Amino acid sequence: MLNNEETPDRVFHAVADPTRRAIVERLTRGPASVSELAGPLPMSLPAVVQHLQVLEAAGLVRSEKAGRVRTCRLEPAGLRTAEDWLRRQRTAWESRLDRLGDVLTETAHDPDENDEGALS
Image 1 (cartoon, rainbow, N blue to C red):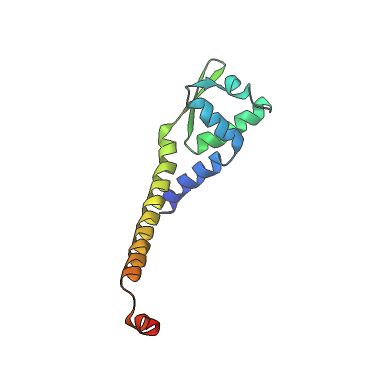
Image 2: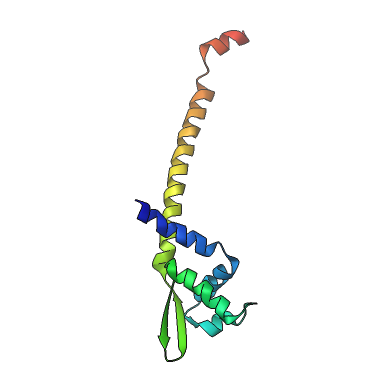
């Protein structure tokens, strides 16, 4: 069970940083070289490479080297890991809120007899 939780942790850690989110957003438009990804970012190329390493370790990005050019692309399975975790949390909370709503509805429509006596 611990291994299943490590992957979402890495994904959430990776996308917690605004620079890494910007890289992921750029890659949604298609593959890009490291230089293309670094272009609009206010940091050195080695710093961008470090961010890419975090994204790769989280399973969000995959890169391939052809000659001197390293091309990165989004890895949808990594995003699905976070999406699945969020879906499970949403489903659990929706179920709890539905049960709470049922209890509140029952309480509103079925007042306790002692309360009725106090009002008379």
